[in-house]
Amino acid sequence: MKLIASLLALVFLALGGSTADAQILRPRALVDSETIRLGDLFGALPAEASARVIAPAPAPGRTTLFDATALVAVARDNGLAWSPQSRFDRAVVQRASRTIQAEEIEAGIFAALKADGLEDGMQIELTNRRLSLDAATGTGAPFAIQSVNYDKRDGIFVATLSLNMGADVAVPVEVRGTAFRTAKVPVLSRPFRHGQVIGDDDIVWKNLRAGTLDPNIMLDPEAIVGKTPRSAVRSGEVLRRADLMAPVVIAKGDLVTMVLAAPQMTLTAQGRATENGADGQTIKVENTRSKTLVEAVVVGPNRVAVHLQSLAALNK
Image (cartoon, rainbow, N blue to C red; front, side, top):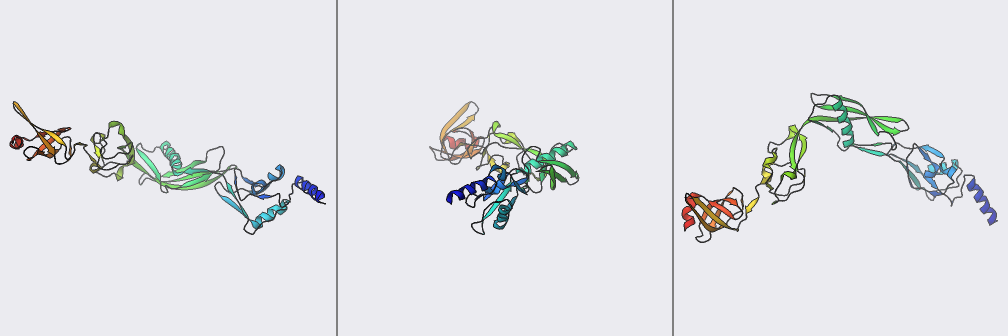
């Protein structure tokens, strides 16, 4: 009897049916076509049965849920002797997609506006910067620009996209945004810490909205080169005057040579800096012999020029 039952089961499988133990429910499946097939829900099926179409696929990026009741109906309609282990059995089928981010959409709209005469120095931005759309996978562009209505007075545009959903199906999607004038602003190409000196090669240019620029933002790269940030600065971050300072050439407590140049003579003495000093900055220096404080201008590492009025203090 067991041999006969086994032979009958093999015949049943060959005809496209199955025993309850042979079917394997697939809890999750990813499809890349317009249809859901029997093999997307159940495993261990003959090739012909596995390829059988049972439902249309969801839209790209979306899912279709088959609960226990739906799965029983699919199994019955396709001759499968499958039954759920519990009422919570389910299968989720997701349609594969190409995700389109806001940057890609902006690039397409910008190209369309430029072709229609958008002025140089303009840039665009979608109102919803977190927008993402799901298009069908495969050949063909994921979307096309169907139309763009642009109001030059306020810079507002409304664009209609044709979203590729596969099988020659396209869905219109409306997006909104703003066109605005930009200005090139020098920023740092890498992070900088206090004490690091900015060089010519450390500056790159970044486009920002011209109407939102802070008047304190530094626009002249020559005013940036040779400076050091007062605190850590990230790459691409705009710089304000208060963010930078001349690098410290003499640190507080350093021994320095105090120099006073007068007609036909040069006087020197040893001093100690009482504060940090950058090149060209006036700092207070203590004469190590007389302990007198004098004002001096930093002229180089460990070297300061004393003001003429400090000559008496220098000679003590």
